[in-house]
Length: 108
Image (cartoon, rainbow, N blue to C red; front, side, top):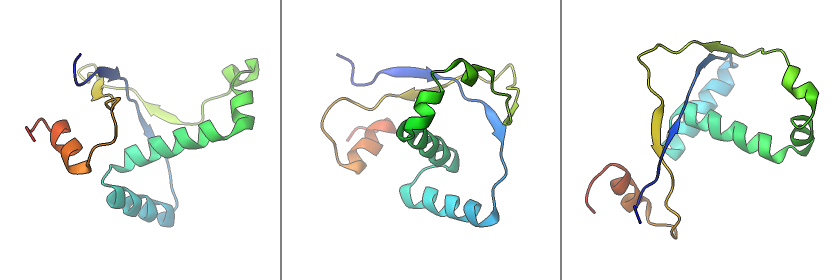
């Protein structure tokens, strides 16, 4: 059984506007957890969407499929390939340093 399972993920670029205080906190939070601001936004939105029961009910309705887009998505260049991200291993939690070394391709 392979140690990693590679999943291709398609990302889009989008423009958003934040208040200055939110942007500062986003940068601080990203630094605290050692992630990119993009990753923080992605995971925060996933968490919010999953926890909001009213939203979960709404996305199952026909109305949800007809919502006008308000997010400005930039078209990706033809040369941009989908990012390949490894799935987390399905084994017990490992120390962060070992996980980082494995993710970076080092032999720990």
